[in-house]
Length: 439
Image (tube, rainbow, N blue to C red):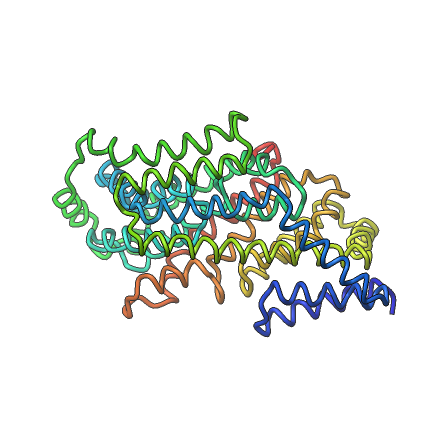
């Protein structure tokens, strides 16, 4: 067999191992090691390349970004910043028809700017927003679907772990990736707000369990306006965090790694001032941060080794040559690539998809004239859709598990999130058609 054939067989083996339940990091490492050994018939070379990948993963200063932003997200989470943000949004928007849905999206958008993790947003707002929306006459399925749908903003609005992972895999500036994610994230949030308002007006049966007039009366009676001073006090910690992290990052005063350190320190101060950091919670924050960070770093080390194996096999160059020779062109390649990512999103988690496809697709996209930052935003949005689609839909499962309500079926949450999937696909097409939106 030729090197190309062996490489393609190894990619198929990787998919099979992941679908059979093997850990993605173990599968990547095993396939990469076996691939180099077989392709070069040299066990020592395979060992050497694996050690180089491991060293580069540990020695790279950029990797410190991951644990710092993860730590910041956990500290913000235990400080009840998410609940305070929702309370303010609820007070401002409760008179609007569909206002609590808009409040959920608004709070999730702001919360995403300091966490970068969709699962954290989904867990927080399931506890905060779903009971409140249900109490005001919203369908349980729509409430849960709104939380799940808007939680994906954490993967696009910086600081986003997916943008960091893509930047590392594609060797792109993390700062550029963060800046590129701002406008698409805002477009996505605005699209979510628009679809909620349209559904509330033209399909109220999908949104509410009561008639419109009854709902408005109930909502007006039950929600009291929050004093301006209380709003400021509730939003002040969040504003400080956003200013410290994003302000310093976009002004060029901080590197992404420094911004993560400043953000984690500011989140620690907020947690201490709010007296929410008890010893048990401190231990929980540290262990969760370590678990998530080590897991991601091991994945990136494995993905680096996997990329080296693909290069040895000549897979990226072969596929690029095939695409150019087939007449597909850049547009055809992008359509096939996005379709593949959407399909993978139904069976794999977000990080696994990036780790498998980016090392293959990024060199091809660059050869076809794509800017890899633009290509990365398209990739992350496509991957995000998988968070809301069956059978995997990790955001849906997170909401369902956090809700712990036997009367709310998993299928109904998927149905409630369906309009948000439509918005994401529309934004994906818009971003692909107009690269200047992210450049």
